[in-house]
Length: 60
Image 1 (spheres, rainbow, N blue to C red):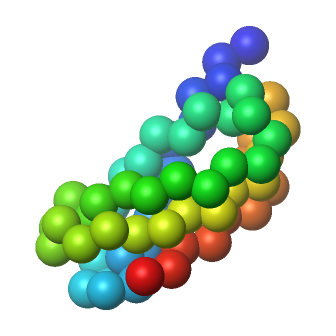
Image 2 (image 1 turned 180 degrees about the horizontal axis):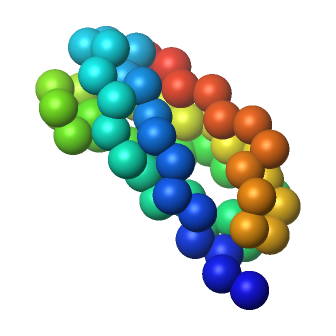
């Protein structure tokens, strides 16, 4: 099974979208990623199961 899932994130700062690869091997995650467009940090709260993203919230 492939635990890496590609998804699109919309930056809460600049409004641009960019691709992000999520490791779904851990069910509940809170990570910080920098926007690939404006470089500002985004806090991501992710709930998933193996190979599937159930919910993803992005906030500044």
